[in-house]
Length: 227
Image 1 (cartoon, rainbow, N blue to C red):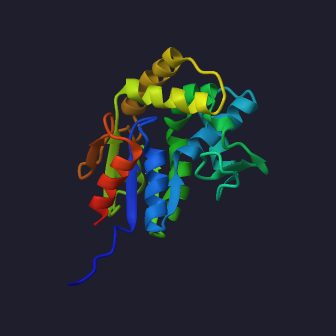
Image 2: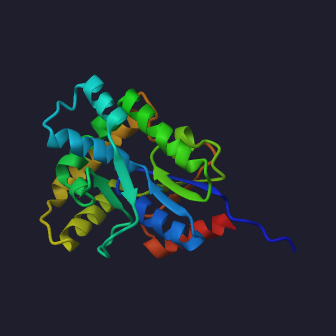
Image 3: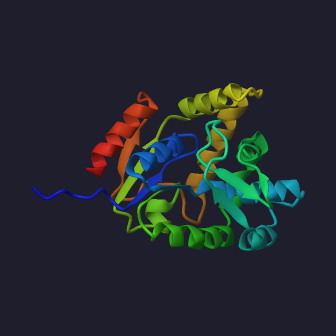
């Protein structure tokens, strides 16, 4: 019997805090593939802009920032739950970019056509090398529509807010569940209604609802799809 190879390019999309990054990292590790969470690029641009007190509504300025920014994604240097290091100007900003200000503003930045174009081109070049699990919101629809396997991971806003709340509390930081839920709902609306590359499943994506599934169960389902 001929042994089949797993899909070389795997696109994993879904809304904020649906568990895409956790699944993507576990899946990439299982297959020996590169794990690339494209959302970190948008978060990095948002973080840089906030650090420099830039007007996030100034589309031309934010687009220019995205075109020039040097963002490095490196293997994880610490065993603290991260899947990679995010380095800007030799500074580790991996967890800094998970704060509430970035959460509340990243959808504004990611809605700009120029920002998406600048970052999508970089993402596509990496993805076309193959043996990659690429995580985002428009991978299967825009960045890599030719992906061999497309998965859309979904969950209710309440469940996603609970997961994000527990993640923050586990790190020893303070969190307000109601505020997190409000941000999740608002971000869903912005992501799904933006004119450029709105959040939606690709027509040929497999949709998984993770509300009642833990991370290991979701991984098992996707590994079955890879066969």
